[in-house]
Image 1 (tube, rainbow, N blue to C red):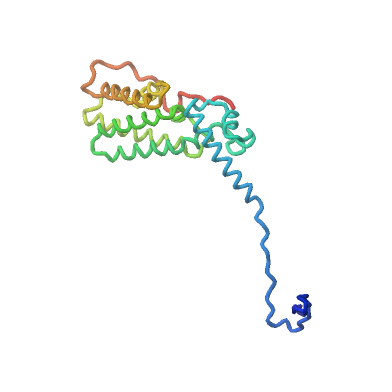
Image 2: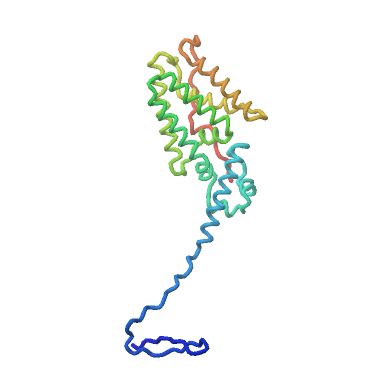
Length: 244
């Protein structure tokens, strides 16, 4: 096949000539087409980040039952955009609090490695309540069930098993009263979650004092007499998410 080459004529005009041999010819440069949707993916990531930040702030202030439309408005996106990224409230809440749940799991894992059972038990309860005092929504997320979430409930079950082991060890050490039950931790979380002040630092200070009182009552030498029966409450049974 003949190849067409070009040479410059006087005055800068290009003249195309035939090269019948085709020797030394280089293939023409191919310009790659633009990747479709690149800008859209960037916008989607940006919207997702804005929704997550808005939801985190709204949940911390008002709890996880804040209307989804209010979160969309706070994020500066339309409700359709929010629901496209997070089809249900459960998926949004589980995503927002995934880091906190992972932190809880990490706290329990570290406590299980502590050779002092009572110190381990006290540390976990104190730290979890401190997290709760800093974020109103965390209490409700920790105590609600998310059957459609990706791993949130499974991680909480893992935390529950760790708490059971910490309780068992603390009892065997003789420091934790024998009639303490895991459900008593739920009661502590409910009481701690009820602390509401106008100042975040005051809330944290009140939480620390409340937990200190609770831990003193949980010590085997700290109280006398039998406790009332354990109520039928569990971590995933206390809150029901409202409809969207």
